[in-house]
Length: 310
Ligand code: NAP
Image 1 (cartoon, protein in one colour):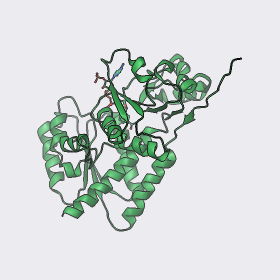
Image 2: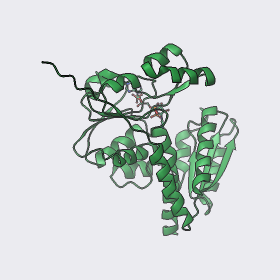
Image 3: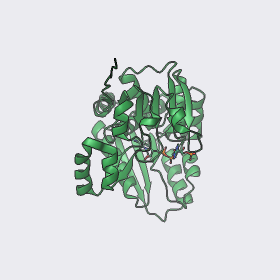
Image 4: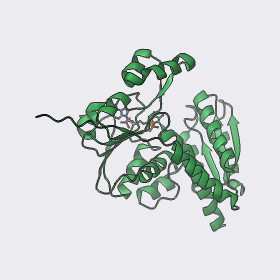
């Protein structure tokens, strides 16, 4: 006799949690502390403009004062360093973020390292990355920090779990792996040189993917029942690609493509993942929402820590 056990994949929607995190920040701000976030953007990249606008809007929602420093594409490293020095010196500024990527002629590393670690609400400064690596985190990069909130909120067991992080960027992959290690997961980090990626990812109870390739992770990469966190944000406009990614749910996405020219897709193929995964974060509606919420939380944290020290 043959039994088929149909698994129904749970979509790990994050909107409610993101709203709750922002609400908690708002409540604390209403009790008296009033942080200020300075957002710095260079050039005319439309995606960066949207990201910064969303962050400023979130600040307004929770009661964080914000400043938007939008500088022309021609801004030099030295001019940007001068602005960072001014923001570092201002006592009324608690958090500084420079929207990445910066234009190619700007020395991104120099800019990140110039930000006062106490105001580094993105958690990218080597001091904050080092603290995280040593298991003494202070300001943690927002995307992996948001993923940890989601895993905890859903009660996903991390201790002893096999966790695999695909991608080793400074902003997602590496800090994600550190956070999981700190919580006693057995962590494997994969990247573009990993041999037989699917053989490695298939051992993971928890699979976090941050590579920037639409729908790259398919059914063969996923262990049955695994929790899959899709960090990717890619635009897809080809209708055939949309059909291959969304299967029976493609119609809605095709409408989005017809209206806006493209649809937002993660690094995981959602229709293939639905056949094997236990849980999957949707794109949009997943990790991205938490990133902005955690920026608000980090800004409040930076403000509290600075006031305690001052
Ligand atoms: P990144 O800096 O470009 O790094 C990509 C990583 O993926 C690299 O480590 C690269 O390996 C690895 N990689 C690329 N192709 C691969 C392959 N075929 N197999 C295995 N590994 C591969 O990217 P990122 O900044 O981490 O962003 C990743 C994705 O997440 C993007 O889609 C980005 O838009 C999205 N993102 C979303 C949020 C959010 O809030 N939802 C936040 C940040 C980023 P190598 O190191 O060997 O080159």
